Length: 145
Image 1 (cartoon, rainbow, N blue to C red):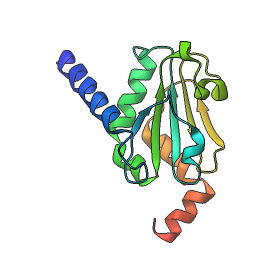
Image 2: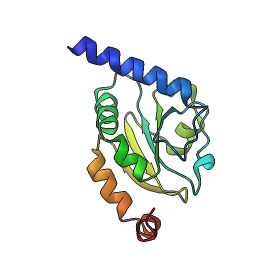
Image 3: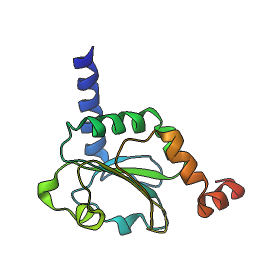
Image 4: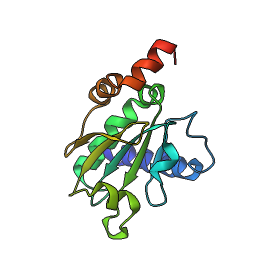
């Protein structure tokens, strides 16, 4: 059963990565790899959740991705895009800007500001509460969006 779940996870990740460049981030809650990501591309459009780890096998990374995948519709409702980076040797712009030490979860607002940093996995319910308290999100909810 565990092997089956890992296989499904690998297939889902491959399919998501193959369509990442072809899909409009406004219409989908996506999981993107961070190597070529520029956070400025998401300003005023999406709320990036950045998940960084030293390895894709880090148990905290695996748990965080499981928690996020379980609630993708809730993230989509909040204009979230998930960005992952598990290659510390590449010195990506994300890593230089966010300076993680091992595993780190970062929530970035539509304004580009860092709203949350956590050294351990968080579930979508907790993340959603933080997002729903943001002034811009409250305005979106009042406007019906």
